[in-house]
Amino acid sequence: MEITPALGRSLKLVVQSGSHQLAIFRMMERICTMVNIFKIASLSAFVFAVTTNLLLVQIVTAQPVKQVNQVKPINSAVKIYPANNNLLPSRLITIEGAIKKSSNMRITEAKLTTYHEFTAKTGAYTSSISSNRMVWIVTGFVVGELRMSRGRSICTNNAKLVELIDAETGDTFGRSIYCPPNNEINFLP
Image (cartoon, rainbow, N blue to C red; front, side, top):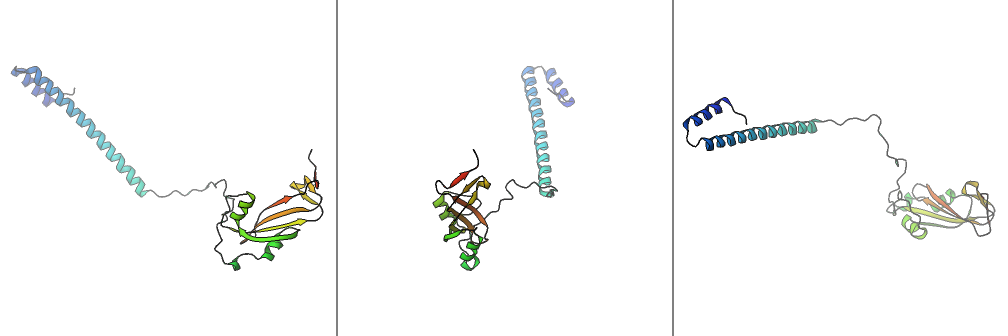
């Protein structure tokens, strides 16, 4: 218990009066305790208010920090192909342009469709291509030898090719090669 000089004088008067000394002394003790609790609570509230105020001032007046060496996301090199099924046909490459982009094969079919339709038929899917992206599916075959799998195997005759070409940019999304049974030679054991 913290006793101030003024409180000490009051306690001496109470002790000298003689009636109900113990009860009054305990009441004074409680009052001192409550005063101390109030002082601590007031100080804590003041510290909290000042800290909050300082933080708010820093947040409001803070300027963005310019980073010199910004880190690029891992997949930042992946090109995203958004939906383009609402483009006018004049903005898309023609069937002749799609066939010219195809490799040396005899074309059996060239079809303009959405990427969704292609994935529904083949099961192949790439998240960087919108399902509403227009693509050319060019199908054909190669007479004679065709090296596959980076030269590790050869299809000796009639390899079927399916190429997927973006109808707006002409970018090739991929190519599948199907070799008829008994026409494939593997160089790997």
